[in-house]
Image 1 (tube, rainbow, N blue to C red):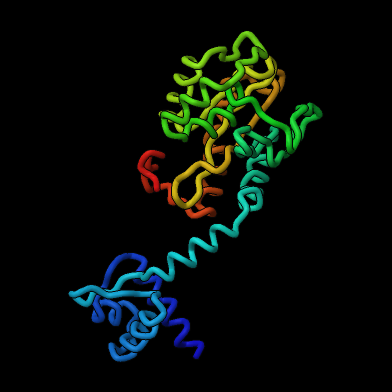
Image 2 (tube, rainbow, N blue to C red; image 1 turned 180 degrees about the horizontal axis):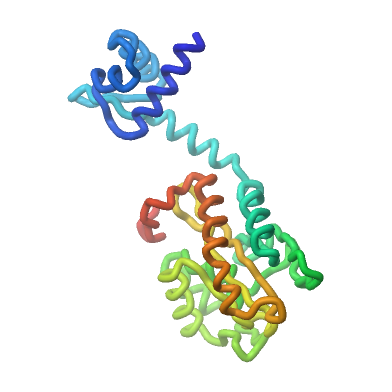
Length: 258
């Protein structure tokens, strides 16, 4: 029985690479065709595989259902945590995780810097959409009409002389974030804090959270914080992969997603 299960799993793994004939499956697994055919028939009866008119077998809809259920059961905070812990250890700086909740960017996780300097942010605190890197990342992914609506509804509180103060500049900033794949906050929210943030995506490519690295200017100037971007991207891409997103796939526009 264990051998049959192993062969079935090997067969599904082989079909992951694309549709294959019975002969190709048998050759790939180095198993007699009659054995492979029985496995395929059993898997097809449970919708794990299907075949076309040319008798080429491919993965079936049952696998997509299971994959969707598995991903839905994964909490973004839990999934991202080990990647953020590694990022925190590598940089020694404050790491945040934020998500949209009822239209607000909210910090859902935080790892403190190793230095004695602590930021006032805390889990559960709201992050302004117009002047924080995480806020920009979370909004930049949305369809244009929604971005415009959000931009028009924001109260542009001025925190520093670098804070964005109007919808037109905010929309332009969001376009830059979309083009670059990350966002910056160079003293826009707090004059002495520099930050860079990047998106975490789920299996559909939708941004479900934003992770950031922040540091006070006395510890790291803005250009050195930006230099931490490769480490940040490694962390966010790792978390995205664990949520089902393949970084090699192009990100579909929100207008194209179901």
